[in-house]
Amino acid sequence: MSIVLALPKGRILDEAGPLLARAGIAPAADYADESSRRLRFPTNHPELDVIRVRSFDVATFVAFGGAQIGICGGDVLMEFDYQEIYAPLDLGIGHCRISVAEPKDDVHTNFASLSRIRVASKYPNLAKKHFAARGIQAEIVELNGSMELAPGLGLSRLIVDLVQTGSTLKANGLVETDVIAHVSSRLIVNRIALKTRPDEVNFWIEGFRKALAA
Image 1 (cartoon, rainbow, N blue to C red):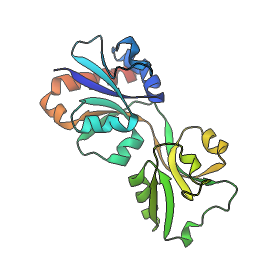
Image 2: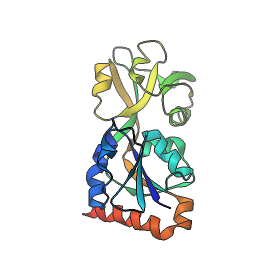
Image 3: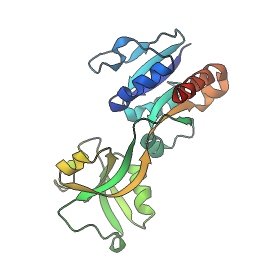
């Protein structure tokens, strides 16, 4: 039975390419082709397959054993906090931050005077925890994308979203007002697989460790 490595679609997939190469992993050529209909790809190692899934789904595939290892953003790990996942390595890719933003033309929100606030985010757990720490109950409007539209269209006063350069916020009239966390991508492992298939899983952990040192 093959070890399955779950990779996220998009920017992190591109950034992971050189790291995979240094780890000695060469997936089928179309693994990075977003137009490819395939989702599971063989590699140059007969015992290792790669799957390409949504970034939020990498942690779920690994937590529930559909994949034994994966590359996952720290934002996803913080949002879901799966106990079934062990994250041994920071891979040093996918650097960004989870931030609070609001319309730049308005007076900044006075949180000291608030007990409730509406927030648009794809990170409901993170957002609630962040505002609860300030004594504020956050009503979350869950969106999977286009978060920057929410304040202007009256869905919410604030957004909590992933920010890399801040250019999308700026283009949509928003300003970053608080950084909840700086994140990067990590190698993650299913804890049960680590116990039941230790030689195979540890082989790939060490492969990525050596790739980081190269």
